[in-house]
Image 1 (cartoon, helix red, strand yellow):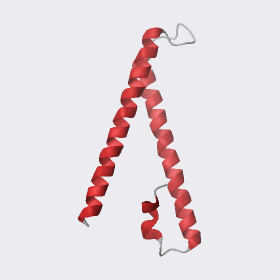
Image 2 (cartoon, helix red, strand yellow):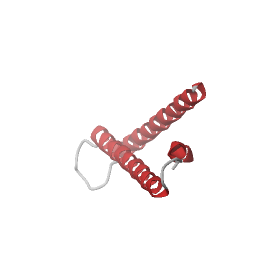
Image 3 (spheres, one colour):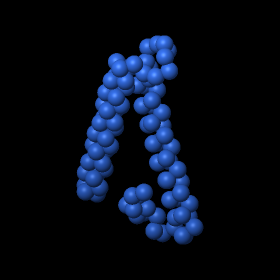
Length: 93
């Protein structure tokens, strides 16, 4: 967890800080799981057409790999842009 997220919580009692830190950690875990589930659902829907065999065929495997790479690159880019915007907003204050 980012220490700056707790910067405004210095006035709270220690017990409340711990509780807030725990809540933030849980939210981050939930968001990570949501992103992972979204990735799996999207790539599966886009790439897997039939259920002829247990394993993916070469075309499906290539599609899933490409889909996952694009999804993760997009997520990283959005995260970096969000961080830039937050930093810009913090310096304007």
